[in-house]
Length: 293
Length: 277
Image (cartoon, rainbow over all chains, first blue to last red; front, side, top):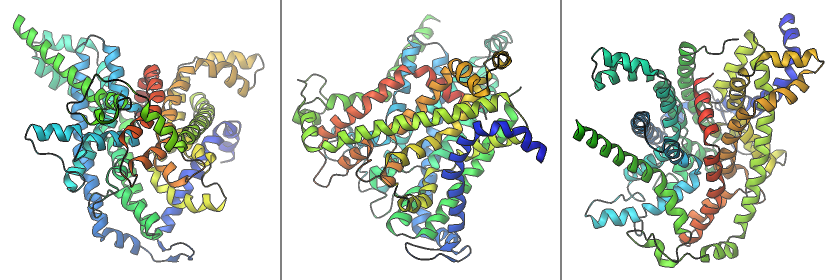
């Protein structure tokens, strides 16, 4: 132990700032939340230990379950649709396009847009009275999205918005991985008489596998914590029907001052994220271990 | 064969067109609408030719003066968070690149995992603490929060970039009597500039656009631009779309140009950040 301390002592001043930030802002508060989740507490009241009853309350609260359902819906639909679109785009780019660099910049543009502005755009484009998309759909005799009253329509609009905001990330990960596949493999497949489809099945997909998994895990983790898009679009309404887990947590904590249940919700989010993170770490270990000295 | 190739090219052109419209239409729509006079904003199909006007900007200036305070706050917070994140991640990334050992490897893994904890979780305990120490509604809170949520990624990225700098260079400097701090400042930082820019893109975009922390931890003095815009969206006496689009355009243009200019570093950062641990 002493040897370890001695050997890393000169490194400590360089590492300390990052670790102090992380410990004081993320790790210790998260552990405190864990403790809080086992207590009943609100403003100006000493917490009393209640065991797992906050978790029981949260997990049996219909509002939480609906929030969880909505979150899972967004994660499952939006993330997979986004992956499919991103993959298609990455393969299209890899076939060689004119103005490739310019197109790449175009695809990256939504990365610069804040959630607030994206919501402003979407609320206008889909506005039930004056929105251009609503008016266009109506004039073609198509059904319009009545997202301010119909929860499923609201979730569809939020899902679309989330895809729009995060597609640059998914696309870049997949495109970079596709570019990393050596050309020889395709030439070899061609010489062996493989069709384009066979080459796609036997070369592209297996070699893109790790990148697809990484992109998916990251997007699961980030989509699971979705807050701003939903809050700014519907505030979880009407009647809490479009809440997601993070909005439920916000309501419990900052509207109802129910810190115990809010903390339990927070830890449910942490555990879910860490389970996904474990998958990510295993993947990294398996494929790269790339940091050779 | 020729017809096949032609069909393929047409298919590709259609796909590319769809991608361009999907990515740019919403952005172009906002920016154009911010200059459209009165009712033209609501014209369907959208008007592409109109007499540009500054009327929404005048109204923004007279009715929403605090938006400009918000921009100033956003600028301070973005610069502060970027400097803090870069300084801390570069020095940690340097050590992680040059040294190894069980303890250090474990602590990198720890950084990677901690990065995946949802930010909303920490608002719960930090809210009363920040109030108690009187830091509520200050720039410092946002600077520290924004930097902290990017130092993990920043450290991993800096390590990856510093790995590409030959170790012989720092050894030579150290033989000449340079301390590790001097080596870091004089040798590593200039050569790791692409890595620093990659980290900067992430932090700048995040800090400039962030909503959740600003919403919870600021109220008046330190309120950022996105928060003011969100208030315009939620305005009770109906949304003034022209003014909202004018504010959105002002908030969006700088960060959009930044991302366009830095696209190489963004791509490098996204790829390295997701696939290196």
